[in-house]
Length: 388
Ligand code: PLP
Image (tube, rainbow, N blue to C red):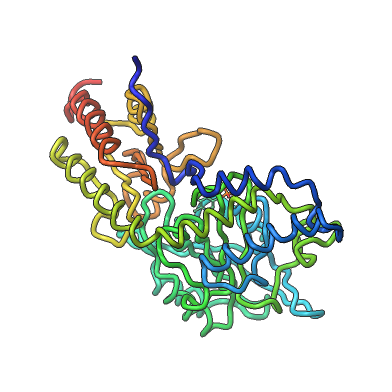
């Protein structure tokens, strides 16, 4: 009999949390449109508004400041725009400064043109270079409009946590707007929009145990908002038209609530499991390079390189052993390119790297199965300098 598969790619997507599954399946039977005034409509509206409160609570926001979208990518495309509204007035954003390790959802720059975009460097430790940001902001030409800065709360490949609070303080000094991609950090670390004092957060349901295809743009106030990306019936207070995906939002809300309640216990557990994994990897292959090991990371993520092992080969080898891991970022059609995150850190991106990421149902047996596969794969590598 085949051994059961072990899923260790939670940063790509999470299985449904049981509470999210219950909430989603119950909501699938609601027949009303949440924008209808009759009883069926009101029942669906109640589910959407409960989800809004649950998602808001996860990130310390007001429910009124949540705009539901179909993905974090959509939320990023909406907020990364030169075109903002302040009540009836318009406000121009002149330039987007984004960290060199952003996910493509942000890296592509939304509605900014390439001429309106500049990368913020990161240090060799994989952390945004705040001096570099300060220099960029000091030379920003305000005659073009205000600066916007996008820095993720934690990187999806390395798990490295970014100094977004410090960056936000700098951005405020220069009168700019700060956008934070909290897709990987939300539900794993405390992310509080008020404490971070950032203008916008983007989050995604499917990274925290909710269904795929739901996200949110979270703002700190309701006054300053990007021009809508999707026009139509005026849902989400006109910020995002289209009938709400009631079942997905019900699951998003339940997953957000579960993540908030379980975060501290889960964080300790994942930290211990990851230590077991990394200690075992070091014992089996002392030359393993664990990226960001001396830097603050998400408790569930390990990003490593094994000299002599290409990431595609490594990923396939793990897959054949029944273990799902990821080679670099898994969001782009299964294609494995060189990691822009490793390049930005000044590492040789051709080295290739694999990511193992854990979640609420990962246990010690899964880690030991991954370690057994790791030992086999590491042992099969060609010794350095061997003829190809
Ligand atoms: N931002 C980060 C850091 C991610 O890891 C991802 C997904 O991998 C996204 C954004 C995109 O999220 P979504 O799949 O909801 O569009």
